Amino acid sequence: MSAADLNKVREICFSAVPKDQAARAAQVLQGLAALSVHRPPDRPCCLIVAYDLRTYTLSGLEEALAGLGFHLDNALLHKLKRALVYYCEGIQRENLDLPGRDEQTRQIFVQAYDHHPHGDHDDTPLEWREYH
Image (tube, rainbow, N blue to C red; front, side):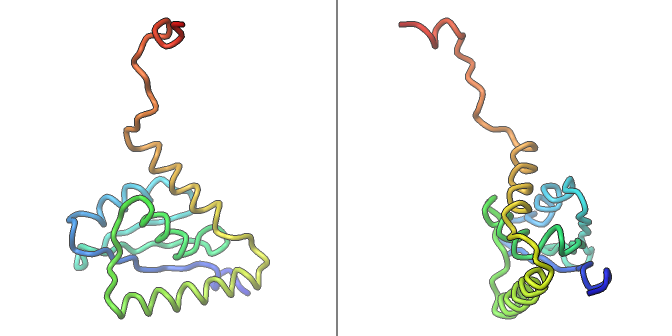
């Protein structure tokens, strides 16, 4: 398998509602290593992603985005394309003896967690929390 076979350029399409999902998803994916994200001007609900199959898969990227609350376009044509790409990429990764997609999915969640405010900070003074 040549290096050209491992470089993938795929389209991720989001549903029209809620608005600006593609822009928000681009921000989430932008900081990931070895992943290129482009927003086509003629398709406001879509992203073009380029990646190396040894690092990412379309199923891993879309699964992580869905886990973050993004809604993919579920038109029949998009579902069929997705299923075909998932299958082909899975077979290619199996032929290369690559591990599952757990690491790439984890990286996307870590990236999103770092960029969003979260509730892991407790403003309660230490002496009040340890009061017995």
